[in-house]
Length: 491
Image (cartoon, rainbow, N blue to C red):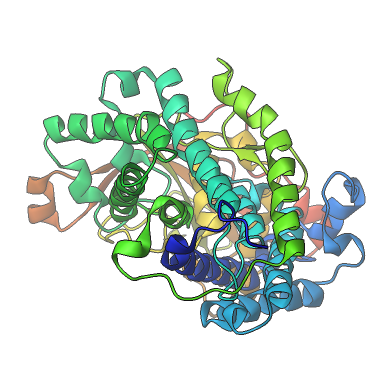
């Protein structure tokens, strides 16, 4: 097919960066699933997939696991996805015929869709839908055999537009501190999982926080429209997105959200100034027809997400179809002013008294030890750590899984303990565990110099009653026990 309007050869380098980067994100996502699923979703997980499959039909949540589920099959799917992602990252999709390359990308999408659609609360984040939507469009980006299709690049820009503009609108319509430019006085301290530089970002002068917030509004509410203008304006808009997203990468841990947004920005960046376009073969008629058909499907499915953007009741991070093909996005429409953390402790003493010695479990990413500098984990996603942040906001949010988490700790369950940084009871499980609610804040420069602590914490009170290990406990009866106390909002 020799339609000049269809091919965009100057974007070959941008396609290369986007596809290889997307394969890297897929690799991280599949490895994360393989290493964490047994404790979270496995047959003895906190929210087991078999229980979910008994309640939800294939039509409501399409997944290969409706055909059959076992932990071994889940692990096989995750590691197959990781292996295929690694192969694509190393260039395998550019060394095979176009149809085979498309099949490779399609298999990655099907495998990850199957995981997300049984992932329940652990996979209920915008970056999961973002990876699936970008991964689906990657099927129609072509490979080294053909020039990048202009229509697919436009669809990727439309995706980027919804990510940025949706996030900008949800902020402007949401918390008043965004309009007052004061949200960043709190955000770096209260975000779900701070990174190693978050303390320093929080301690920037307040006028710089105002500049951060204003720059965020410009990037998310103005720049997205420039993505659709002729070059070099579109490239400049894409580069502006890259710079602001890298700023967010440095300031916290948001899984692969920021990295995927960076990659999507390359759909608007013309790489011809860096390297001339190589020779491409003619676009096969069937491939062109497939791209045009997908463009039409995305256009139709975009109606509800577009209407959502214009709605005063804008939804954040929602999927309007079960395949996550066209979604709506947004982040931090409201910002918490105070940070609360749930701290889990255990004891091996038989009787609980005022003198009982409690020992704290250490999490990998969420704040715990006040002297421990937060670590950088993104783009790897620590799913339990993230949900512990929500648990501190509301016990009712954690009710479906928190009691089971405490009972797994009473068993010294190896799969659960692998999710943690430290287990204070390596020899034998504790007799009792309890959860306490603390208020955390970043220390000042003076406090850091004098104590070496990055955090200061103050006990608010028990998060729920202690839970005990009893010889007569069975897995089913233990799992049903309430360990989060009241369903009222956390302070």
